[in-house]
Amino acid sequence: MIKKNLVFRNNIQRKYINQRLSQKFSKDYKKYFSEILNEINSKKTLNVLKSDYEFNFNKKDIKKFKKFKNITVIGMGGSILGLEAINNFLEEKIKKKIYFLDDINENKISNFKKEIEIKKTLFIIISKSGNTIETLSNALALNIIKKNAQNVILISEKKNNILFTVSKKFNIFHIEHNKYIGGRYSVLSEVGIVPALLLGLNIYKLRSKTLTFLKGMKHVFLKESAIKLANLICSKNYNNLVFLNYSPKLNKFLYWCQQLIAESLGKKNKGFMPIISNVPKDHHSLLQLYLDGPKDKLFYIFKIEEKLKNKTGRINFNNKDIKMLSNKPLGKIKKAQQNALIKSFKKNNIPFREFIIKNKNEETLGELFSYFILETVLVGKLMKINPFSQPAVEEVKIYTRTFLS
Image (cartoon, rainbow, N blue to C red; front, side, top):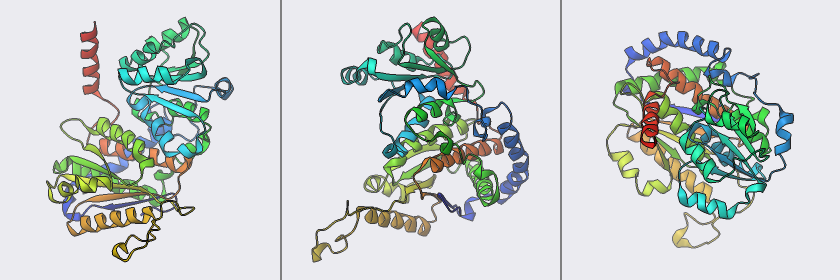
């Protein structure tokens, strides 16, 4: 059990764990943990978690873009999901209007053009490769790539790619995306930090707890969790990972988690299928399946514990016929539903984990990002899977370019 900003609990019954496999993973863990420490301190993906990570931008160069009150981010997958999670989680601290273009959607682009004044909007276009088709398509459809454009930031690798070439040809501000940091691991790099800075968030606090799960009891929890998850995946009895989300402020974070886990571990006929389930709404559509359907699911319960500052959301209707709801805050009703589900999970021996957020701030979110990155990488290494590659995705990208040529 972990306290302070976060409370994490595992409830994965012993009967689901292959003890011989766990012993093997425990022996292997020391080697892979050492690899992780080395990768953090070298020019590899996990360097993004290093406390003194070196950014490829100067805050003075970013200052001129702070005047924009409207910001639009164009990207796909790891280039945008992390920032959406930051915006969703810390929305109350953000005073600017931010838009996300993360799909090819003709109606959305058309409506966006009508709603936004292009010249008064800052556009941040992000693509690690610099050649992402959807990202380029949306940017070109908006006709924002112009000579000496002062309202555009391009973020890509600094090599022979379309975005970097455009930055030189049209004299548009460019920030280098480190080639050794994959998109789904990039949220705490320039990809997430530059927009977060322009949104007025404290980027130092966001990165202040990236290494807390590498020591003490937090590391003990990380180790035990990675071993149990690798065990479940290798058993092939648990193919589905269901995120039960009781807090709307975590919705985009879970989409970030979904990509991280699916792309990192979905290889060699192994992996979890991460599914986001918004509850208690889904109690009335999917709960029957969750409790009484195939026993092939591991559940993650997510919630933010917040104290209501006033009586907003409290039921003031008093009547003896609905006594159980009278004078109850909506949050208390939701908590009762969550507790009821946990009790049912325990009674039916259904494996689950709890992730409870105590404080909704930059430090907590940075710690969440880093925990899931570390856990995912460790699980991949224990299973002899490369958690940093995505070969199947690259194949589809190649086919797409073939059909367009």
